[in-house]
Image 1 (cartoon, one colour):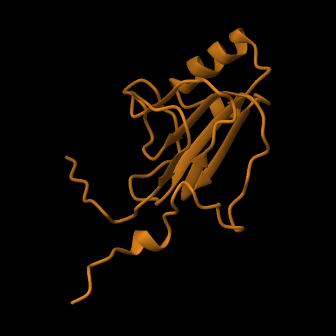
Image 2 (cartoon, helix red, strand yellow; image 1 turned 180 degrees about the vertical axis):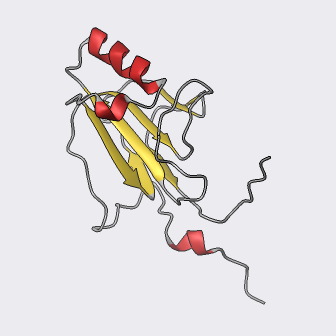
Length: 138
């Protein structure tokens, strides 16, 4: 009898493998912040992805490029409380809807957290698994 396998094994790549040609590769640059989230809120008062639905099958990827001033970054976070950050017109904020992502740091040192926990600094990848779990809410 063959070992069971799951459909996501067909799509999830090992970190040692190159990304498929169909993926979009973002040019190397300095990032102040990279946030990948699949739900609408990062916290009760932080409406990060206003258009996110529990079953949309997407990771909402936000990143802020270097060059943003501290006051502009603060305005961005304050606007995020109401989900208005996408309407700010900030040229340093990029928002993409993706099904998978890989972050490959190019600097020798830095900090990466996943779900609020610090992880080893190095490549990180994520992929959405639609329909893998059931959400019950009332």
